[in-house]
Image (cartoon, rainbow, N blue to C red):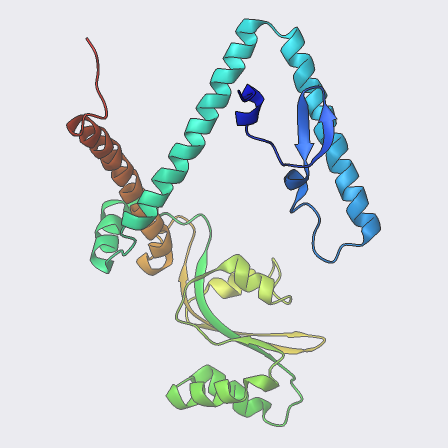
Amino acid sequence: MFSCDFFKKTDERKPIARVNESYLYEGDIKNLVPDGASKQDSLLLVQNFINRWATQQLFVDGALLNLSIDQQESFNKLVEQYKNDLYTKAYIEALVTRNLDTTIPIEEAKMYYEDNKEVFKLNEELIKFRYIHVDENMNNFNNIKDRFRRYNAKDKRVLDSISIQFKSYSLNDSIWIKLSQAVSKIPTVTSENKNELLKKSNFVQLKDSLGVYLMQINDVLLRNETAPLEYVKPTINQIVINKRKLDLIRELEKDITKDAIKNKQFEIYN
């Protein structure tokens, strides 16, 4: 006759520490030490990890001895609920990622914008502007200034081709940006002259110790005006996607329950 112990599965893991009846195994620290770490750093990392594990385990064992059964059952329910929440969240996110349509047609964005314009009031000024920072003593300074102010198709190509000569610049004047962003780019703009950037179709020239800032303001929107669609479209896209996501999650919850009932996986007993 064979001993019953013969049929017991042997635990071949190599223990490296023990606290009462709990063991820490070599596999538990497999990826703890980063590649390239010195022997001294590796030993320190491992020792600190073991000490933290032992301290935590001793507290857990102490809790099991000293906490009431009711408290332990309450904590176990919380642990189980947290585990269920983690699995549920991960699975739902995987399903949503696979099934969610994130394409927002411009017509849908426009419809949302028109229906919710009161939500898109500006809390700070927006401007469309271009600027260059150049050395005033450059031989072609006046030519650059003329092209910058006139700014026809040829001027755009020329200025773009010689932009390496500029100390800094931004020539894309077709997008809305916050006034604060423009101010942060141009140190010569102060609280006293900032309003010059809030005058539509205004040309501004300001000097500093390094050169001259040439600025052209194309358009302005003031605080409490309605933000333009092109400015808030990323926000609208995110709002619409989030709504689709919530709707999809509700649909998934209904479908998974419906399918489970249909397949005899879910029953409610009277």
